[in-house]
Length: 300
Length: 300
Image 1 (cartoon, rainbow over the protein chains, first blue to last red):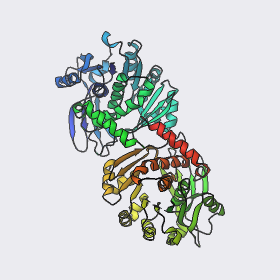
Image 2: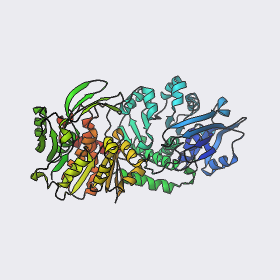
Image 3: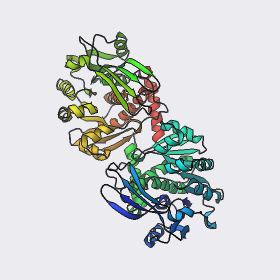
Image 4: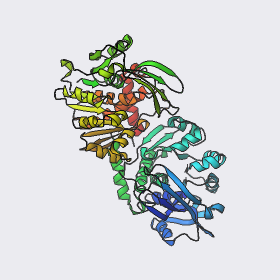
């Protein structure tokens, strides 16, 4: 089954202590779409400007991403630039130019409206809601977010959380949202906001799933000796997860654990190159090999 | 088989945002000995002063800890006092009074010298070496440490590392020792210092084992919604691990993963009360139940 993904489609200029890469293909939807594409057909919803390089359109197409929902608007593509410190965990935004995102109103093509799996990747929660309202009874909806929306659009986010099945956020966002330092307590509080499934991402420490019915799952991260650029790892995680989920047979409850492991694997590949450069070079076979390796690395 | 444990035997005064507890039984050897006692007979090596409360001697005895190697010296018991911040991860030492530890020279009773399993719990590395030299060909030796020794006794520690099988340290110590931010890279560097097995503890994020022969194992921490006092959790982890290892049949390589899970379980109980108050109340049955739960929480 196909996965509909809405989120940001951007150009990222990324600086690390070792290198600098201007105007890479980036954005939550781009990372999530490529990650999901290894498992399932993807329908992308987003907006780019007239300056959006044709080679990035070709990149989407190589991953068989349906672009009917990608608007090309007058103006410039959303541009983010940021810099990582040596430890690759703390990053600093140098500039954010919203460009065509400033006036973006996602409009779903008719062919998108029946997609059973919906990933509301990181973007303003009002836009996430706007997309969700255009859907016809999706089977499973997951939303991701970022600290910015907790700061400037919390009421919108809380409204959205009432109508999603799953919610994904990172550890510091979970603490900020719940005012709870302990992540296990934070998970409990987030369930009360609506979602049946809550996933807290912890970067190199993996992720925790809390399911209202079946409790916790502790998901490992794939161990990497070298992180080149972690930008988009979280988006790759949810993208890979939703891609796998949409193709797995049986109840979601049962498949979600394996889906998170697949998400972790794609996220690990993402960290091994700048932007999407490494992710676009991998194969399903490489993903499956790393999945099996993670099973070996955690068995006791 | 029995486990010999050398380390600090102390009185801990612990302050958290919610409570204050003076003169609890503490020290790396006390925590490790009680943790190991659920699995195997323990022989303790340490020193206390004349002020050491009789009730703590009784506590050791209830856990069937062999006290022949516990010296009682003229002077005061080692006293540590510290304070935790709200998040329970950062702590501040308020005072350290070495007392009888200042002149401590561990002397092993003859009955201790053939112990097959040796845990050199956190204490000055010169004392760890001094104990090890008195042993007759132990089967498996593990050393723990703390940042203090990296700062003031690094040559002693490096010397010790040449003669232990396993080395346990936490993530920030691993970074400090190797000048390597990435923990997977740090593990590789630490192997070069001697130990065949290196374990990096990551608190609430679990631990990573690196074995020179068989590679990595990612060990989860037991998820706790409430941490009362994390003091001694790391010592409980190595103590539980060594206790289980000493009784498990088959090669160490195979048993070490399960041993780490047992260690994590005892560490989780340790965090649920001040000092050793919670750990001393648990049973092997409760430990086994939580071990099984961790297996369920990580299966995919």
